[in-house]
Length: 470
Ligand SMILES: Cc1cc2nc3c(=O)[nH]c(=O)nc-3n(C[C@H](O)[C@H](O)[C@H](O)COP(=O)(O)OP(=O)(O)OC[C@H]3O[C@@H](n4cnc5c(N)ncnc54)[C@H](O)[C@@H]3O)c2cc1C
Image (cartoon, rainbow, N blue to C red; front, side, top):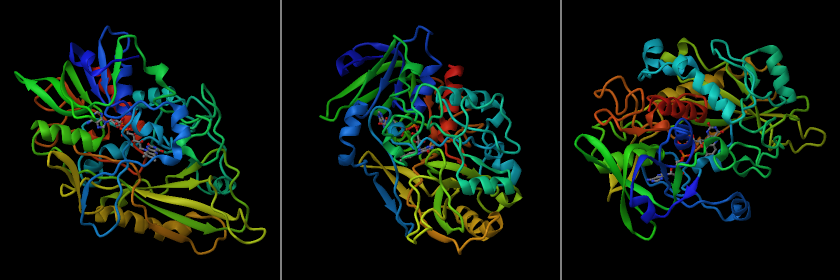
């Protein structure tokens, strides 16, 4: 992929202009390779190579997201503005969404159904797992797979092996931290946000799987608006850090920025209808530390295990689904002689609902999240999980200690939701904005609902699917 400057990017028309350069962008572009298309990626941030990332890791301060938070609780939002976006700092957990996550309304009378099913996305989930060289093993009842994971799962911790023997809904966390393939085997250092040995999949280390000689990259150019003419998107306007503005023309525009930016671009452009920006949300997490009478840990990666016991069932008509993560590294140690490793560190992660009062709005033409708090549904899910915990543990243990609700799970969702009609959402099943068939919104902004499972495998699958439709 060649780099271009602003005058080269704006001096001609492109077949496809993709805003962003992370999962949503590159998995979409992967389906365009070899199709004689001139594709331009427009990235707001700089290109930072791995050596520079390692050298400057202690100086990094993530961007702050403007918000009006009336929830009464601290709330953070995780974004990265650089080539590869959050793929540079994600942890690499890749559980799939469960089939029920796609039809909460028809199964449980809650929120909205996706107009796409698990079965429609499943082949693309399998492709995304292959591309990211995911290590995993299917452990979930009701979750069909068309093919096995490409690489074997990481070794479970000692406690997870006992949990699994008691209840097979415990198993290894699917992970883009490698056990085989082109990247180094995970070293389980627990410093996954910038992997010291480049074991986790990133857009940077996976670039070869996405490249084409007709692809070009413009960095340091923030997309501000989409332009339209004769009922079609005709291009975008961009602004550089020094304040220079330019227009870039394209036959097809794909916004793959992130839920805040995708919504802000549509709002500035007056595109997408009244639903744009509404329902931004993310999961709520809560750590649990449990002292146990045997040594734990010795697992193969940072987050080794997951439990589905609280994930799905009729309870979801009233309380959120909860995924249980089990953490191996860095270990949480006990400060008692001979008992250092006698601890189990879990995390409950509850799905949240897209509440219309939680939304992206523009203030002085820049995005602000109006945040009133997570849904009562999410908190009921966590309460149910805390009440159920004793019954899930088949060994003696001390009273669990629950942490505060985490200020972020770093899994932004919503703002340009997919729906069956323009009355119900912003984009159609191909992620195209209703009424503008050559404008797509990619990534979790288009998820009608989230899930307790981490979103990125589904983001990647949805982009592969949308790219196939082009
Ligand atoms: C610390 C951390 C850990 C995480 N761990 C996991 C995990 O284990 N599993 C999981 O599933 N998910 C995880 N996530 C979430 C995951 O990183 C995101 O779901 C994923 O990166 C979303 O991909 P994306 O392409 O939609 O957006 P992003 O990765 O957010 O990328 C958006 C890109 O668009 C660019 N951009 C934004 N606005 C504009 C604009 N106006 N013009 C041009 N470019 C723009 C950005 O600079 C960026 O490059 C984690 C996130 C963080 C921060």
